[in-house]
Image 1: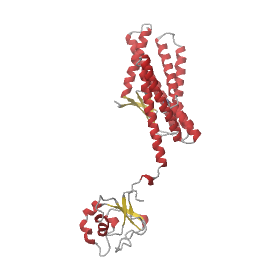
Image 2: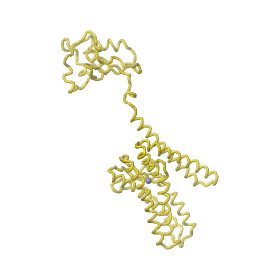
Image 3: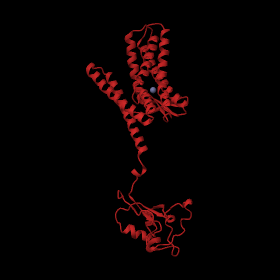
Image 4: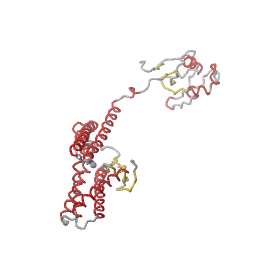
Length: 357
Ligand SMILES: [Zn+2]
């Protein structure tokens, strides 16, 4: 399930069909073929009924595709990329790269789809007036007019993820001046609509025994699931905007004097604190110089054992020996590297333990 097939592209937008689409295509074909055969159109054999049912199903999804294209072209007009249009179980979805910059822009993208559907409703209604009444072709045309009217009206229900929800979001965004508040409001409305659909569908099913009523619950579930996703996204975006880096960063590390010899370092830190070693960061002259990897120390043990200094009395430059990049802004960082008899914990913190400050 949920396998996508690319079937072409429109206006440079890749067009995909989800495997679930075939289920709904078959379902709509069967329902329409059944209705056509019971209506007894002149000379409509079983084969013709099925062909007409399939035609309605295919034209219905063409209408859905044009609806999505309406959203997409309006977004492209605002310089927003549209990554794909996919047809699936519940209709179509246009993957629009990002949000419009203004509430008005978002509103225009949202209503473009329903406007296409209402235009198609007008077009098919007009066409059906010129076709022979009670004929099969007139039946198909009228049916498509009705389908497009329902598509437009249904999508304008004011709750995310429906287009009406996007309209509601844009209005709240305009009034409150906060996009996230708009999404939160429209997502809450979407949740309410989703639950209403689920409960009402179940109620109808229990009262009438019609299996079709469960479809309403199914759509309600789909709306609820997506409204929840919008809500989570809003909470995440709000949190990321408000949370300070200091509030989430780890304090499980130690800052050590980069001018310590490795022997001093081992004595002062590693041997006196035999627990799980924390990351060690070397600092000198108020700047962090790099990270001390204990595994590197183990590899080059012979170099530093017993305060061994390769060049007379000058200690191995800690940063370089541990792979620190020389910072061009800090000037020569291997200058005054005289070994000190005692570690200098001057102007940087020696210990930053978890929650100790
Ligand atoms: Zn739409």
